Length: 380
Image (cartoon, rainbow, N blue to C red):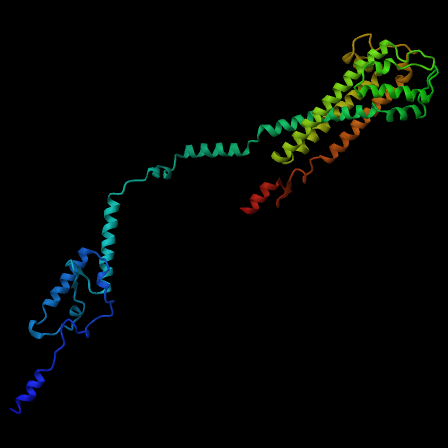
């Protein structure tokens, strides 16, 4: 009896439950089997693990300590098998993704814009490149038109401004007081000429009617200007006011052209003024040559352009001839030509197309190219 008691006590020691034995557990999270995985691969891994577990001895009463027993699969509530290790799950997921990609690629339709990736024929590519280069190098028409208008308006504006400078009391005073100016042989003094001549010049630029000159009288009480002289001065006034009005319009158009060219064409204002100065010099030299070779013929043809025949010829005793003799018109023509010539020369010098004004720089080989091309070469 004494020998059986220890044996019973020894056999009665509690044995660990198979499901509660943690000696063979891995380091995997407790609920890692809840993560989704590939069903086919998981089932295959679960079946292999189950087979390995089932091959262990049935009567041992303990969990198998082999790796297959340590990673035995478990079943969730729906009976789906989950792999027991992280490596098994990763392999199952990778296999599932590969199978899904292959199936989706097999039935994938081409995109609607896939034709855009097809390169056109070489002829079409060359044609498009040629058109693109031609469009890039083509200069717009509007800046060219503005440059032409500026060049044409420039000499006209200068001429009108010079005429306005001559048709002023200041020029009268300089003329009547300069040495060598012919005096009046019929009794007008320098003060008389300055007074009566100022009336005539003022009439050309104001808005008064013909009575402004028609009501003027001598000290003796006689009319200063005859009816024919008053009528001719009215015609001159119409021409002068029309010319001044056209000058104002040309100045406004020139300002618009300058503003447009400054915004749309680099160097366009300079080119337009340079061309205008050349045109002005050619016109002045041509007209000056005609005037020098035959002043009387030039003066007559000039009056025939603007006035009717017989309306601008007077006798030496008439007031207009006594106030404005032939020498006065010669001096006036010289002053107008001189002012226009001086302005054209100054403009020509200021707008001369030097390398810096044209935006050109020298390259390393001594050639000349535009600043934009040089900047592009440096950037390349």
